[in-house]
Length: 164
Image (cartoon, rainbow, N blue to C red; front, side, top):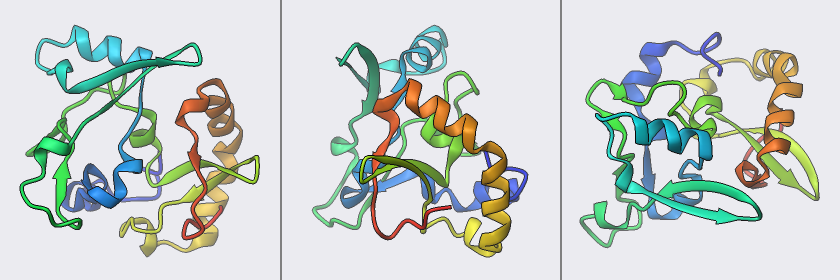
């Protein structure tokens, strides 16, 4: 989403957003019904890693990384099962919204939907916050509209995430 502001090379070399510590499992991306259907149609992808559930009339999925951790260290990271040696192996229709909008998050803060910036993205932290805010202002309505259509994608607000 911020590809107009970030260098693709920075993201490809970092890959921070594609691995999860046990303490950051709340950040594991959520797949929509459409993502799930696209993944199931792709013979090169393993859809069995997805835990598909239905809740409040929505079909969604995440993946369970618990078997990917090798130690008891809470800071150990487990990679996304769709992370290949050259980056994400998912097509645009397969890729979850969380990944598409990274490092942005639509979050619920005091029953208000806000757009926040993931503070751990090293690439975005190289940019001026004003430039990021100006860019987000141009896509804010689209982000909020999609989030409201898919409320299960909205994360709870965390105070270390700056609102943009």
